[in-house]
Image (cartoon, rainbow, N blue to C red; front, side, top):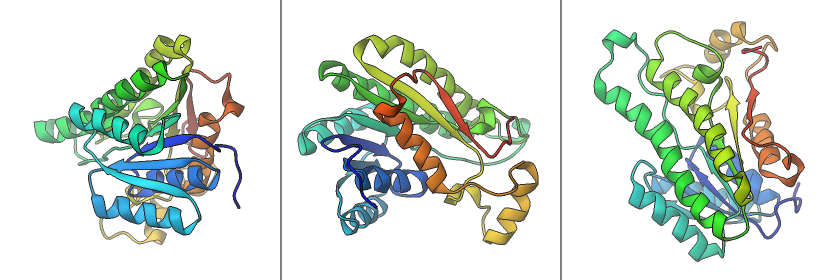
Length: 254
């Protein structure tokens, strides 16, 4: 079903080649937005664009590494050049990384999580905000996580630290730039039906059996449920939501 909630608007989605990024990009397009999907893997981005076009939407792919400031700046500039503006951004690029006790982690594992999950959000926001500030404002949603930001799990120090930082950065940036007409919020999904919820070689049944005991609702969330939250935060319906981190995890962090 198509609607025009985001008609005439341009949305940029980082990490748009898989999982939540792909699902959100398709949802934005179904609701009228023109979508730029960005990420490091061109083939995955091209597949997302193809799916959007098959849905009847408009999209383009931009290969970029958000941990590199030149790439982040080019990503925003290319979006504006191709599509005539930038009104919405979902900063979703992220990595889960290795699970291990802190004392057994190497520094590269730490750096990868911090660089991708928090520095990448900072750099993307910096250049998105610079455009939006000069062109009437906009809405930004950052993908955080219930892990780190709202619950604690052992063995996930880099991921948890970086996602807690995303939630804090979101609040700080929201206060910095609400006067510029830019609403900045975050979404913190729990276990949802995306590729990051699976362990290597794990079946869906094994994944569900592992995760659902810790979810009061008794099931893993769907990408559609998380995507609906993202779209609400990006829409005028959430016009009074500023600096909020909206948790959607079936009660796991309640």
